[in-house]
Length: 264
Image (spheres, one colour):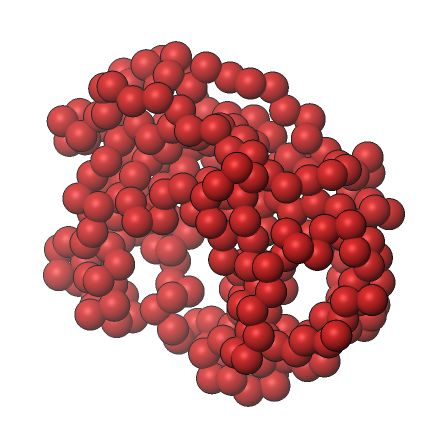
């Protein structure tokens, strides 16, 4: 059985363990059901997630021209402190920016390879934590817009990491942390204008990923360079497919690629 479609990040369902779905235009794959099966991934072509053209993907699933034009790839996406919709100021598309920026946002702590601080829209909890491969996470601040979340993250980055070590996360070299204690430890460093949004009483969320075997030395699959790869799928964590031979494939990092996926 072979399925073809353009890659976008896997959809997920919060359960024990997490359920993963690869959604194509005409097909829908429950990836959990493919665990312990041999699959083949074959690169077919590019398909920009904005214009749909067969042009090399630059970043985030967009070709270079679209990346620098669409509001979904503006700087405030990666750097929420640059958000300006609350001031009525346009970056690329004020309507889109208001829709995304002017809604409840969460500043959180997540533990995937280490404790890190991050920002996400409230409606993206716990999806954001799943995508990062965090085995535990906790909300620390809930604010009404992206800008306030961004300045909080910037302030806390001086005291806690803001990046995940993907190799350590995939190897499952993790230690449990008391995220409630971390939250209290970081509270004094939250900006004054955000103090009233601090979440006083909550507990951490624990996540379980469907992994039969963690890679000892994860190797990242470059499907464009390799063109085709076959292997036995043994795990799903973050947005990664984990194979028996320690090869790993980051689905999200390959958005905008059209692939064939065959179940052998």
